[in-house]
Amino acid sequence: MHQPEASSALPHRGPNEAPASYRCSYPRLAQVVAGRTAAKAIGQELLVVSATSDREFEAAFASIVQHRAGALLIGQDPFLFQAGGQLVALSARHRIPAIYGNSESVSAGALISYGASLPDAWRLAGVYAGRILKGAKPGDLPVVQPTKFELVINLKTARTLGLEIPPTVLARADEVIE
Image (cartoon, rainbow, N blue to C red):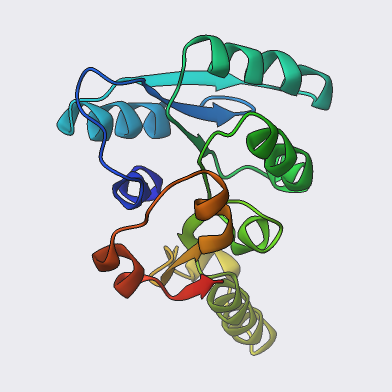
């Protein structure tokens, strides 16, 4: 679970400031535990907000605003991926800095993405397909975890939100959208 690490890309907030929020369609215990552990390590609180349909997004954002969450981490999930444009728009409307797991959201106006490289994942899928086509039994192939992660930052969104991304974070970014 790498997403909570992306919270280090957000400007540092003191321990008495607003909690970060984590949006997911169905909370995955491992992700929530890792997120809470990461938040606690930097003196923060993690508010978990879920939505299982598009109609629930407004209520979820109302809860995030009510709790005065200082940032939003969008869980990696097919449902939330397909709703990326709507989530980016709601984040912008409510002026909530958001971290996504896919760079497409950053291209659409999100602040930051940190997640597995999709081109690398597709390459690995091709390697697996090639092995299977050459006769390997799928059950005999090892499970492979992503090894390449990408950090993408949208500076235009940062300026709109009045945020300054630290130069050390910008230097680690794989892509910076001006």
